[in-house]
Length: 230
Image 1 (tube, helix red, strand yellow):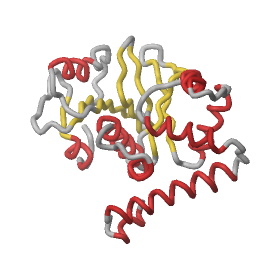
Image 2 (cartoon, rainbow, N blue to C red):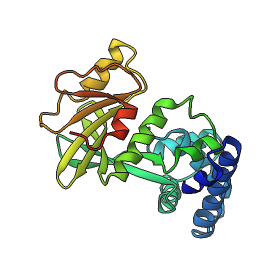
Image 3 (cartoon, helix red, strand yellow):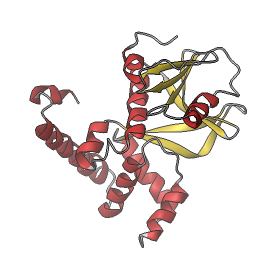
């Protein structure tokens, strides 16, 4: 948020500004514009989505979760409330695509928050959920550079970001650290079924280059600052 520069990114004033901004978006752009009566339900849905940024879930699974809290809500209502949040640019919805069948999947989308600073200011826990936050940061940079972004599914495996700009594709996997052989196999193995020659990245906070099999590994700072991805 540009205004943060005016307060020199000072910790407490920044948190207060982002908290106030979130309240304004929730009240004016979502509640009032859509004449929402059950504000408590909206707040619970927003909290759930923010806690699960970058995680696939369905309206049905969220309805079951809310039922466990003694709230009976139709999946259609949940989808409407989340759509209102997307319309207010609080969240971005990312569709899942079956890369083998070349079709959009109708369930289990992912959602990312428009500013992860809002997540920290209102709900906290960014460092605890650092893997999700890094994914959120990369997603926003992909959008900023003009890519259309989807989540890729190939068999039982999933690719975090399948990016397209004017027919040129880019694949990106995001993880916190490649700290074990299992993690390395999972992140690089996501590309096993992808046979094209478009750039494929694994991005993490590791300082050492672990590129292999034509798949590029890059530190997230270098990835975000690169002039272009090739």
